[in-house]
Image (cartoon, rainbow, N blue to C red; front, side):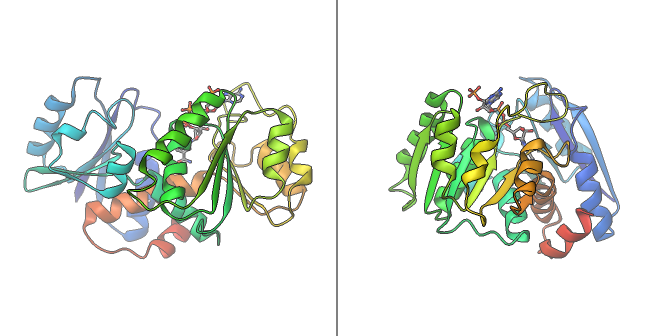
Length: 282
Ligand code: NAP
């Protein structure tokens, strides 16, 4: 029996026990996975207890993803790249940090036949997840990444982050940013390979939604349309794209993908991610 936690504040809403449960069940691994409320500043005490309790690792959500770094012996490349950790493995009393968030999205895209390399990608929204994803796509060799946001300065911040690591990571992507006006959306989406919604517009519990989706009317027929939202399973954004015959994907695969990659770390063995993805997303 392996034991895992997810820690955060708030944490009771976390879907981690459910998605890790799906993966562990598909693998036939006996597990216990608990949500643990850890308030900001509470990491040192939690870690002391965690190491002695025999858990093999833990996932992290707000507000610990960056605060955990000083406690770690080593961190992986994505965690270094994003300055954030979502997965900690405990080994011989030492803590090792990883970030599987963007990798989870990349895995779900691959399972849907989409490889970001050499692609023109438009991301709507410039929050925390958008930033992580844009950096990952740049490092992976996207041809262009355009970030459009209500507050264009936040899209510009992501542009600046990518420019600051361009030489170090040999980034060749053409990175652009802009506002969220309908004409801007129309201009940048008409000739892209993937359009990705990284805003909460249309999410269950959020009152606001896209008022006008007609910017999609002029998109190329082969543009892949993805939404990071998984509740509802099909947002109006995705419904509209589907009506226009675009291939679509919601955010559930990202959630499952990041869990599969984290479980590979916890179990310390190579998993058949594709098979697990298929089993865990039904
Ligand atoms: P965030 O940091 O709060 O950023 C939200 C972004 O959406 C901001 O750029 C914000 O624009 C924009 N936005 C919010 N309300 C808007 C409105 N009414 N009109 C136009 N733009 C609006 O959020 P996040 O953490 O990056 O998460 C983004 C999305 O990803 C959420 O829907 C979340 O549920 C989803 N998500 C999915 C997964 C998964 O596993 N599938 C994981 C994490 C997150 P401003 O900059 O102008 O405020």
